[in-house]
Image 1 (cartoon, rainbow, N blue to C red):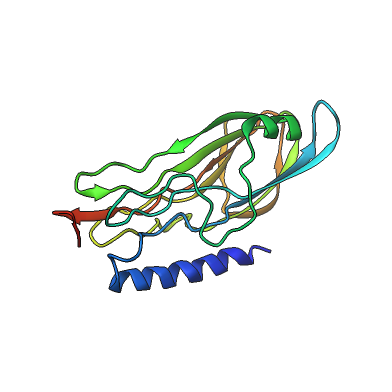
Image 2 (cartoon, rainbow, N blue to C red):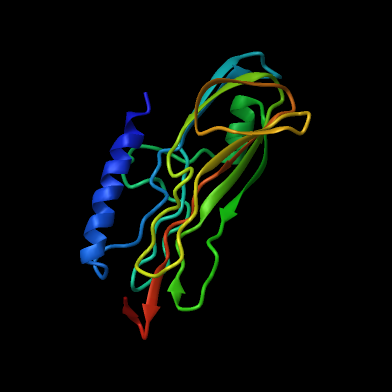
Length: 198
């Protein structure tokens, strides 16, 4: 069902290979994942069943001329919209505790990668979670000699304070009070010496 992650890995691999021979023509790597997040349950107020199907936004890579773009959908994506916090809370009945940029570290002599996102949902009722994403263990690649980009991560913090990280999962049970925390990777950096890419 998560065929698109394989497709993205292949595109990212080709992009990386090409950037090694044309570093002045292509940006560094981006968060490279659809990061599909599905939460289904019953709205605590209306008792209506819902299914949230949400791809995530993350950081794009820097270039020889500029920093990367922040909070964008992946390169292999289309017809997807960003759901505002107020609509998510009204439609699905959970609380959005936080939605902010996850900034790349700033290093002298580098254009930093674009920021990813940190997003926290707190359940007001029980539900089920499915997710699938890549770049969970291997950081986003950067230009030559530049610091690596970030990694993608999804954690469930139970109402008892226990934390469990999920990469590719289906049917994860969520209870009232549980927090689903998503963090998308910041993009790869680009090292610049005397305004000339290495």
